[in-house]
Length: 334
Image (tube, rainbow, N blue to C red; front, side, top):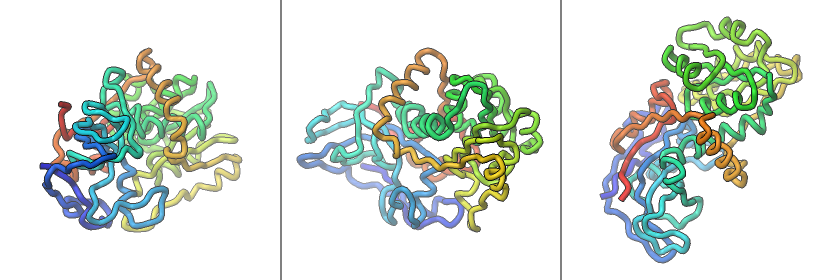
């Protein structure tokens, strides 16, 4: 049987198990020009919350009754599609289910000998590409500058901080909890970390960034964005990657009240969407892979076992319960 999670009703505020329908259907069959993929790992990302809203965005919303969209790594177990053979490992968007029929669009093969399969959903997948291009292209870090990252212990934030260190920057991470902050410093090499759950962020920024902030990579939004805007330097770059603190709001999204700091400092605030850089993914993957092999970059994953746990596991993202890239394991390779 093919276990699937489908969208039952659009959530208002935080998604709950009641927003989803868990179904068990026959494993689908394929026809000419298709392949059957057994899903092994599902990527859980904050962006998934936005895909549930019936609103104009960079991607169409998930439709009621449809399998929940998600990045996946799987194994081809049957193929009538040129270019793909039984046994191939592939990355795509097969959704939160155990088996998927694909025509190959948006799917590419990956090699488990080069990196663990789960890496292709994290550091070598969408989060990795987001962090790489967001920092390099929009953040434009220069050696000696101060880079601050919110959501720094997450899949994107941890990568951004490490790239900034490789580029010669002073790096300050904002994360929730003593353990995460210690990890940023001891394991990832950050210069300082701010525990937003137990510290006054605005005051802590003054101590951690005595020379101000040149680049802010924001995954959180809300009050933390406002706090950082009080510390930005002349010609600072603010990269808006996400606003996880706002995604489950039942009231209007809180925008930055300190935005005039952008005017005073002639700073730039720019939003990024990872799909804008698809053609350059191979270049980024090659460079990130080299950093991992050389030991310059470390990878932190948080893997939860069992497709049945999907609704609760997804919410770990918004409660700050995941430590590193959050992945749902749903199957084993054949």
